[in-house]
Length: 246
Image (spheres, one colour):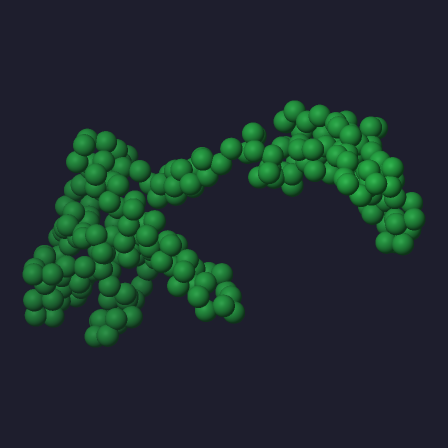
């Protein structure tokens, strides 16, 4: 005895079964010997093959209302195995990104498959302990949080992401003199860096590379957390505005 879903273009499927439109709840079927092919429409078309069911509808309690469903659909949903459930979820998340590198598609396919299997096993464990199952999006979010939660962004200056505008605005940064180097001390000169705000403003104004080089502003102060040179006037602008070039 077997029951399962199938595609409408499967070999030997009756072509007249798929003629005409269906409304929600409509059931069409064809039988050949003991094999029954059903076509039922809910939110989308559901095609089933069964070797022991009758083409009958039964009332089932959904999340919000009572629905009429074919017996083959009810039994398939109740006794669906892990492999079938995994294939079903995997069909909702196809790898659509095209790439010339052959390994990317199988890599992301296996990554998605591992995530789906994790979701299935987790929900099986939660049901055994009387807890509500989690959807796939929540599981993916928890996995991402667990992988990045050990990274301390605020207190680790070496791994500080200065490209995030909110990081330089929300956190506390302090201006300091540029650290001295052995070469600068030998020459008796102070270490200077190019001011990032002044340089980006000149770049935004459309100045050429030569013009920016001739007019660039050197400063002896910098932000040790962001690791960029900033003159005294530009330090506050850089750490209080998202678009500091305006």
